[in-house]
Length: 371
Image 1 (cartoon, rainbow, N blue to C red):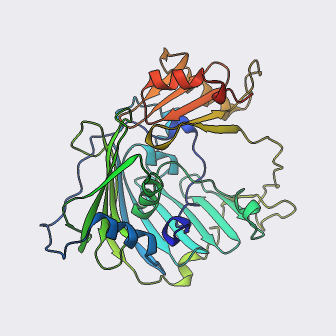
Image 2 (image 1 turned 180 degrees about the vertical axis):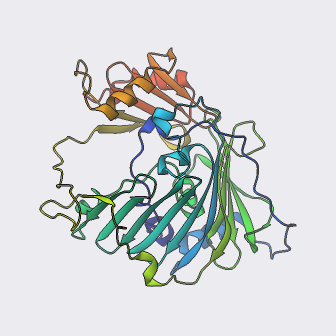
């Protein structure tokens, strides 16, 4: 495994979002403005791939702009409709600040018109904080891989160019065509462009464009274009970046006075908080992947056939939003420019960069039964 794809840069950054909330409606995305194309020494696609796989990142800080124009109906109860909520990254345009100082120290701040949301990871401690709601969550890890997996789960929406590039690079295999694009100047830095295209025409994704810093060999921008489209449906890019290691003070979090803190470490209660630790008694959903490459489909079971409807208020709210989705292809469908979602009546969620008809075919496959 390469150093690039194995490095967990900002993967801890956002709590889990439901599979159907991977994308959302928003304003039309426009390509971020860049300066005239710089004159760089030629490099082949193979050389750029090696650059990405061997790049070293000791420290980084910067401002990131993320845009999403997936062409979906607005469903606030599923997608989140507050500009400072982490779930709002699935729609529209957002500005984030990021700091990274090695795998054990990273921070992300989503800046909104109504406040901000932060996630701070420092050694065994991970904090999430929302200024608008005045709430925070604290996760304490014992350092084991098993324990770390119980912490904040990464969203399917990338929060930095590096995270987006990491996801794209995982798709590089015989199903992918790789080529060179135009060089560009992004965040004041010269960059090469690497283009990934699915060979399987059944994929809804037309291409993924990675702008790679000519000096540091790290991604400065990632754009995802739907098949047949000339403008990105999703884009995440630095508008300002420094590769200097941030000060350790950036990764220290003390809950402001009056913050309501939820302590997720069993047996420990944060001083000043009235929240008792909550036991995790729920079973993890079953899941599988059917197919390979760009047209693979993820299948997730969220409930068993005939299971009683949830009584929890948030679960009911999510169910009400799901009931707003149109019926078709054996369940409720949620379609976008880049992928489709099928929620079956027996409690399964199918997600893939394919048509709803293909998801319906996969749902009938015994490999996707998840009994």
